[in-house]
Length: 68
Image (tube, rainbow, N blue to C red; front, side, top):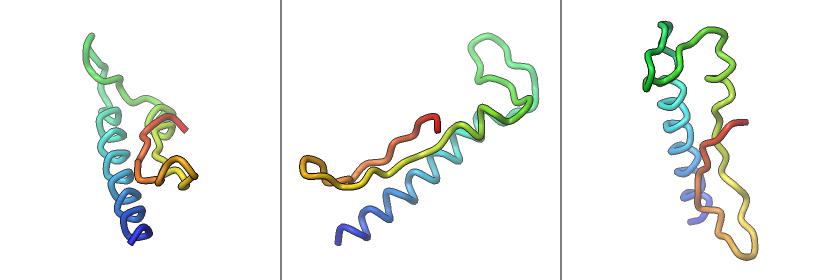
């Protein structure tokens, strides 16, 4: 069922978004090579996910983690 598969991709996107936000939520100064430190939260809020609609060429089975 396509709706069930798309719903699973939404869940996957939410988990990956949560993990990516968690990486930048450390409230400490970042050393070179580390993930950036958390000051205002703008970077963490800018990380989002998207499950695109199906089109003629694409089934819509993917999750994109990117800035909003």
